[in-house]
Every structure is written in structure tokens, then in C-alpha cells.
Length: 139
Image (cartoon, rainbow, N blue to C red):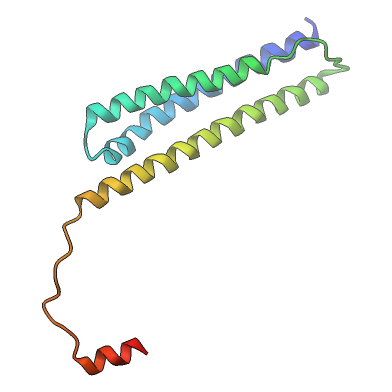
């Protein structure tokens, strides 16, 4: 088999497999985080989780197929194939990692807002500092 074809088949197989594995792992273990972020609303968390998986696949598989090379590279040995596939897989891993941390950041902000709405309202103080203590604190 031609080395260019070997590199592309290897790239497609590895990057697609990694994408499927990461997506399933995030969907399975991220569900609890989403349920908490959406204040226990499980149907909403499950719907958002499914939408995230679909978007995850679209972005990553689109990136993977966009990066399939046109086959005009010159490979002088298996080392060139390994280098090319490693660089391409590294790009896929960086995209996966960036998307993961972006999602965590977004949903942690949603969770923080939801927790803020659940806190009891502040209460008025039942004691006041004497005027001399307030003057010392102002300095």
C-alpha cells in the first residue's frame, strides 16, 4: 500500500476513534455536572448533553475530514508517516481539549448563577457597632 494512503487511513481511524471515545466519556461522566448546573432538571440536562454530543461530533469530525491531505506529499519512509499522523492527531487532540475546557467554563458559569438564585436573601443585622468602633474602622 502507498505510504500516503497508509498515513490517511491511520489518521482517519485514530482520530475518529479518539473522538468517539472522548465524546462517550464526556457524555457519561458530564451528565451529573449538567444536572447540577441545571438545578436538578434532568430532562433539560439530558437534552443539553445530547446536543453537546451532536455538536462535538460535527465540529471534530468536520475538522478531521477537513484535514485529510490530498495525497501529494512525499513520504520517504515510515518515519515520515508517523510524523505526519502525529501532527494531525495532535491537532485533533488540541481541538478536543479546547472544546472540553470551553464547555466546562460555560457550564460552571451557569451553575454559579443557579446556585446564586438558590441562596437565601440577606438578612438585616441584629446589632450595630458603637459609633467609636465605626470611626476606628473608617480610618
